[in-house]
Image 1: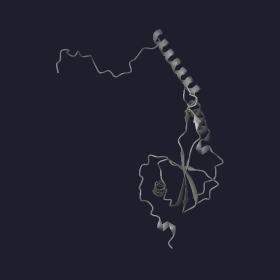
Image 2 (image 1 turned 180 degrees about the vertical axis):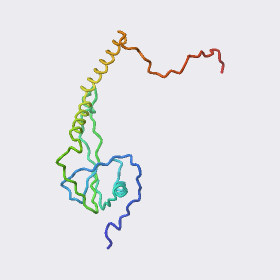
Image 3 (image 1 turned 60 degrees about the horizontal axis):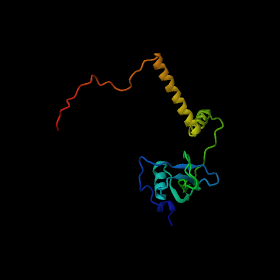
Image 4 (image 1 turned 30 degrees about the vertical axis):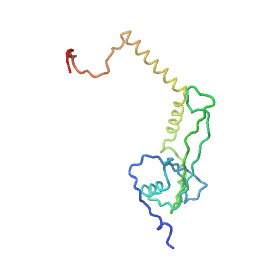
Length: 181
């Protein structure tokens, strides 16, 4: 009997510029010949198999799919006026586990993170998380209002001169009013 890799036809569906995101998950409990991915809900096993083959030249022997439903929440997150007894279920997550023909081993964690500027990444992540809060949005609104107030006071006091921001198209031309169409 021929090996299973010769029975499976690889590369039928070519993918050039994908419009989707596939995430490889770090799963130390799986053997090295298995990899777990987060994929879009409309993705199927053949799409993932052909994607891995064309992009990374990885042949997948077996693919298992699991759709994980999210917990039901009361009202949508981030709503300004939450309403009681309005239920919302976040979008489901689709995971695929792939059995590959060659093992994949995650590289060791580097001890020195200077080359990856980990401090800058952590600071940026912290800033982004802070900007997503309603308090930060309110602070940004207050800062903008203060800047506009200072600018208006400077204009009224004569410290700065007002400049138009639109494009000057030349002199105005009067148009005839009695035109019949």
